[in-house]
Length: 244
Image (cartoon, rainbow, N blue to C red; front, side):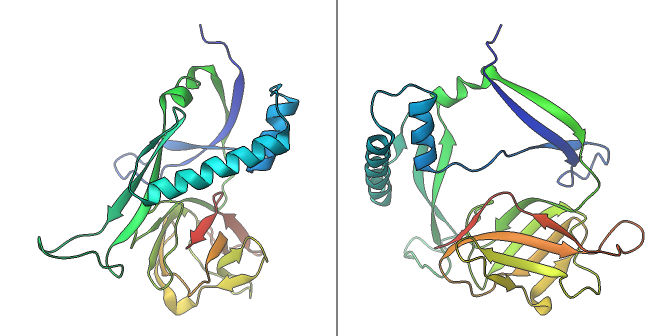
């Protein structure tokens, strides 16, 4: 029997990704918070009993990650035991002689769980908290040009958003789709003319000309299944998106 060391909480949401069964659900974990390198190193000392200081561990980790990124950029694959990483080229080449074209091809870094991380799965207990309140939720976004899911943004190209009750509608001035700069909190609203598809479970839009950085995605809407809400509600993607 597995030794339960960890617990994850999750809510159930309507599964809008399947069309054949209208009654199934997907589970979405309740994220406690996002940890950075410094916080993990501090926890390794205070909880894990690491035999070096948190600052020394953080410095060594940053050196490792910097070198790993360098090697990935040279086409090497990485296997840490906890995750694997590799460099992938996306896009179609129309002939054997066609060269790489950044306007139609893209490079992404792909990460997958490794054996050591998979070995921890039996030690995790999942607590399903029931069906989430009937509110707007963003389940997944896809950057159409790069094919990246919940990760990259390509300004001027399409972004596909899948969720529940996310149709942008209402007369409140705050209604709309926003990219919020994670550093400055500056909000860039998507022009209504750049929303190509606007359905309750799917939105396709043209990404604004955002500067390089990290952004959070927000959808503010008064949409509901029956009548329009008196007050708008906000759906947030729980993963940051990056413009390189």
